Amino acid sequence: MGSVFGSRSEAPRTTTSVVSTDPPAFQKPFIEFGLEQARSFYDDPRSYYTGSTVVPFSGQTTEALTGIENRARAGSPLVTGAQSQVAKTMAGDYLNPATNPYLTSAMDAATRPMREAFTEDVLPRIDTAFSQAGRYGSGLQARQQQRAAEDYLQSLGDVGSRMAYSNYADERARQEAATSAAPAMAELDYLGLERLGQVGAAQEELAARQLQEDIDRFNFAQEEGRQRLAEYLPQVTGGQYSTQTTAQPLYSDDTARYLGYGATGANILGGLFGADRGGTSAFEGLKGFFG
Image (tube, rainbow, N blue to C red; front, top):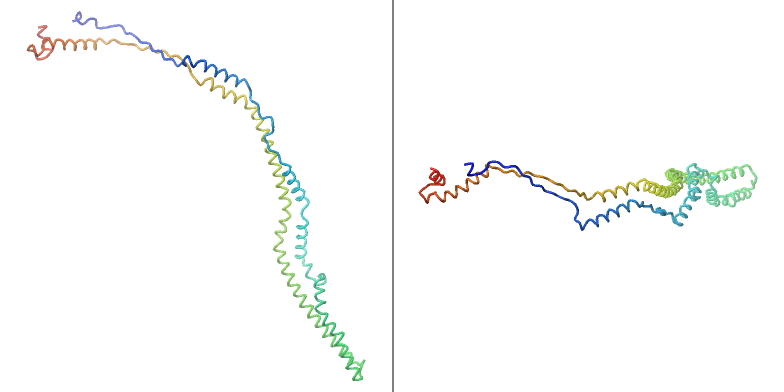
């Protein structure tokens, strides 16, 4: 059997595969050029914009801010006058008729007809009546004149009281209104300060932008080299080129080979000694052949 089917073992063999990821030859000049450019960009530091990046105030803005600041510091005479008037009203400066020239004039106008009637009508009639009666200068005439004067003064007092009461009521209403307006008047004290604060805020905003420009310029100088390096490294390490060699053994399986030979021989022998020669299978044919 051994002589028929040959040797049962054979030394293993290997096959070698080489996988290369090198760029194609036509690409290499372009890659080399790109690496040279990357190096030149890295060697050439970038510079920050030499001018100012902050927009300054215009002349109109500066003038407006200066005007607002001056007005805020000086205050408004209208506000001062309004506050003074409210303070006087609250203090009751206009409640006293003696301090209100307009009330005095109004009272004088209201009592003038009464005074004229007393001096031009009442007293002359009394004198005439007592003179005609022959009792001019008597005590009865004096009492009559005194009674007429008392009536006159009483009428004057009534008119003055009514007018003073009306003035007092009006001023009390004004006092209450002034008291209600007092908080708003007090807030006017802060109006100039608020305007001044707005001017200061605008100046601070400009100063903050100028400071931020200096910070950005400083940070640029600090980070410029690292930024160039961060951009340079990916460009020169982006393509990884290598060659890989692998060796794989090729095994010779004697059993499988002999089974293959057997199957082939069986087919041949089956054709020679199979059913067409009275056998039932290739095996029967083999038995008849070696029998």
